Image 1 (tube, helix red, strand yellow):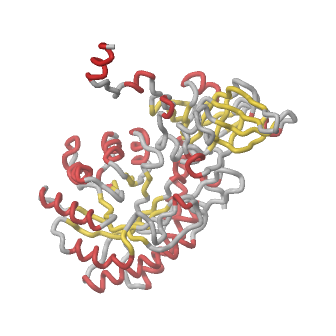
Image 2 (cartoon, one colour):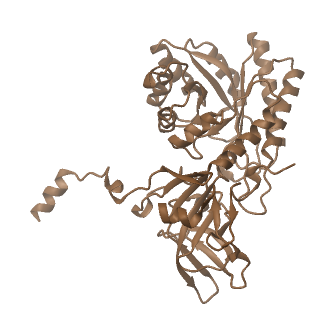
Image 3 (cartoon, helix red, strand yellow):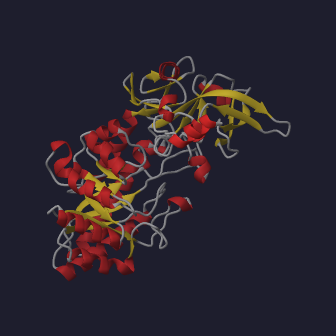
Length: 458
């Protein structure tokens, strides 16, 4: 079967021209840097669209489905608008993500509000926004219940607003995948969800709550998953829970969310799941297990996570100082680093990079071993641990697969400004996140009056 985009390291529109230069979305990399500066995040729209198409192809035989994009991976108003255009729902985990989606005109009824510690103000905003935000009518976002306090809070707010909120319960399934410890979420000690032994009590509380309508269960077993078996096991567990609910309450929950977290290929040795195969295997498992349990097929949500946006993004840096140490370590420094990509220092994430203005550099006879480091005052500010490149000061370094969790986890560490983000397609490029200025850095700073007063006395 043809590869899906998450199995490639480069965006689908990546091309190398006759001058050995890389282009993305029909736009040469050096043109992007000249126009928009460096560092620069670049997102390929075609890669996003192809990833979505591949996933929907795997769900095509399933009667009702709503694949969902994970806002936490990368979200701005342009991305929210694009997610809606490709026919996905949207997962949000804060009022900020929710506000971003609503500002872009996203349908509230196709938003799922997650989180293990949702505040009362966030919940009120979510419940109110369906009918009130910017005059739109329609239902509020569906809210994922993570704990017993959620049940009490949501019910209280719903009754105050004289409405009923559709909710799903997140379970801890006790199913693990082989991934980094920090992004496992299905194990018994997870901070997310309600343990299986407490599910009956949680469901009974919801059934007794006038402001809540239970529509289904949700689970998420982790991120950067590389195979399908854990998801098939999860579906079997969920089908059994749905059967038990029907037997006890005489009705069936109408929605099933099995999470996701499909992996992408960051380096050559990564072997992620084909997106179409992954979606089809889940849909097939739901059809089989729900039929075997004499249950109607629920609306099915899956969450491919970074697989939609990760490969679509690249980061461009200008190469600065090249340092060769006597013991053989060579450092290649760039004008960004851990503030625009904290994943390597956070959980040792690995990346592939190339010289965008000379793509044959990796195979050049002049190539050397380099450790690619950022400009920040931390020894752990390493982007790529070791790579072979023919590199010179002023070259443009391109780091691939940075669409997910780079912008969304970025910071102003060392009081540096965040890069711009540009969307490219069919030879066009447009800024979707403006580069921060030095003025932006101090825009929210305040000096207490007594500091100014006491300084004047000295």
